[in-house]
Image (cartoon, rainbow, N blue to C red; front, side, top):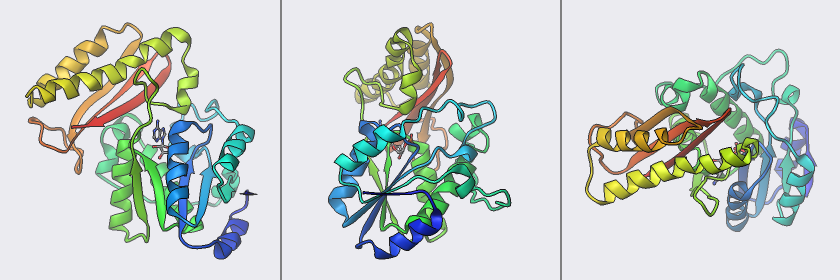
Length: 276
Ligand code: AMP
């Protein structure tokens, strides 16, 4: 397994990799969710590139960029076990030299939900993904359903800008009690970790009510909000039931709908979603 820090070196090595190339972009502190993407990439491609880059441009000024968990040594050991060919692990300066001045912007879709709570977040995501796609030139890139809006935005960018790759989506990997696995779960103390199960319980409630015939989106939202409000450590950012393609809020649930939520548990902001 090669570990590459420089863009030029990565591009040179890319020319020598056997086609097809599968690519998994991550911010590191790898867990079973990331590894599910890596395993799928390994099974579908001759070569696998994984990037580890905590992308500063997708964090807001009051967000957790500097405290975001990092453990490169452990990440590299995990990726070696998965028989990854190349790990690309650039510095922030390498990706954004001082004169950097170009942005890739998906407009409307990126202003909803996470984009409304975290202004500029998706500018960072789409810009870094474009850079990484240009550097790795993959046939396929692998993303988790856990970040549902990110997927919608990236698929739109790839389609609108005629990018030459396929975006492959994998389901959210969860803890036994339903909590979506996330690098940020490490921030939770034991009480908060217990409280954090309320996100999945709220999503499961929507799924159950929908299965019983409830299609009024506002009633579903209100039931989810009521459940979340019973958890004293939870502070709701948003609860959304939206059209999966446009991310417009729905009045009546029509399939496929994206039920998504962002909730602070103490100081830790968690997101999760399911599809109806
Ligand atoms: P991150 O390192 O958080 O930027 O995530 C890198 C990739 O892993 C993204 O495509 C995420 O959607 C995906 N991912 C993160 N957590 C999970 C999970 N629990 N299940 C599946 N994919 C995940």
